[in-house]
Picture 1 (cartoon, rainbow, N blue to C red):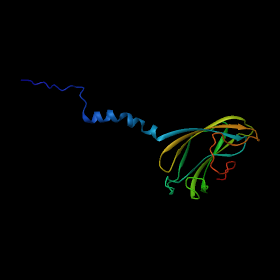
Picture 2: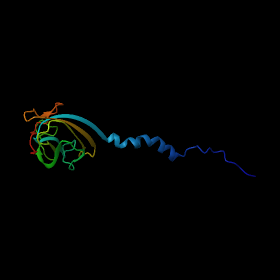
Picture 3: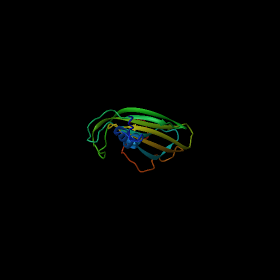
Picture 4: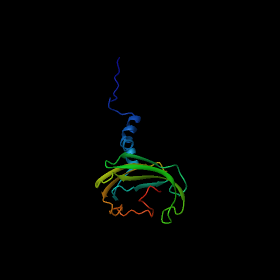
Length: 163
């Protein structure tokens, strides 16, 4: 006598059910780790200006691993300089008066260029989280008032490659 099983070929196993349930979470993992930010910055033509400076400080103000900067979209009308160094954080910073290692990114437009430029950089902080910053640059003549248009202030000089 031949017995036929009544199990459905569409009955998922436990492993398949877990994979289906976790699929959207696993697929969204890298997207959740990246926070995108767009900033605007005015610069004078032909002058170097600091765009980004990231310290190696953890949230508890202890020293962590060196942050990493990765340019994903370089400027079309200028050049970037990446430097590492040490700075003492300003008294107004969340970790005041701490000697920290930093990674910094500077921009300089082509000589005589005026107009718009754009840089996109990925920043991997000491906590391992990656954020993406797109910096929209308005490059003007030599008399252009420099600085971020979004009101961000960090209390440091931004017009030279000195950290």
